[in-house]
Each structure stands twice: as C-alpha cells, then as structure tokens.
Length: 101
Image (cartoon, rainbow, N blue to C red; front, side, top):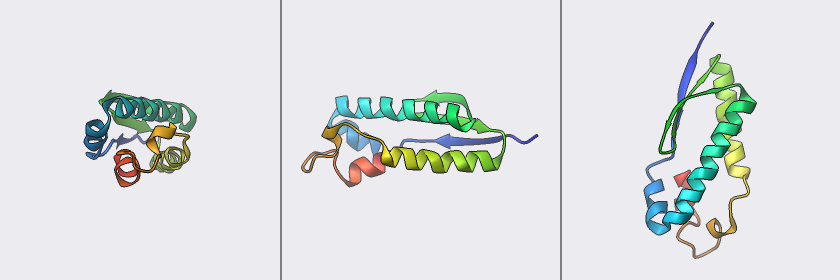
C-alpha cells in the first residue's frame, strides 16, 4: 500500500486580492475551499489538514493524486465565479485573479 501526500495552496498573489477587495477575496477563498473538498470526495482523496486555504491532502497512490491535481486545475478554471471577479477594470480581473488561485 502506498500513500501519496500533497499540498493545495493559494498563491502569495492572494494578498493582492485581499488588498483589492477583502469581501470578494474571502468569498473566493470559500468557493475554492468548497471546490477542494468536493473534489477530494469525488477523486478519492483525504483532507489531512487545512489552514487559511492551504490544504494538506493524501491519496492512495501517485496516479490518483496526479489525476486529482489535473481535475482540480480544470474545475477551478471552468468554475462559474461571481461576475464581479471577471469585469474589466475590476482589481480582481486578469492576472491577479487568475494567478491568485
């Protein structure tokens, strides 16, 4: 039996989101955390611990972990984020938003 652990981390650019709009950043972190937990259930993973959006996760094998990581990236990219995140001219638009999560 093999155990594969990994980390799912919101990048340091999240601070830029907080500075631009704390309420929106907190909602985004909540959506992100819900997504991580839902995909762990779907993907056969386990949440070991979480702190401020940083998750330590475990899987039964490296293959399962990699599949989950790829699924996570795709789902985050395709999620329906609230409109306020995507508006042109918004501090949360573009590079800051996309690289923050």
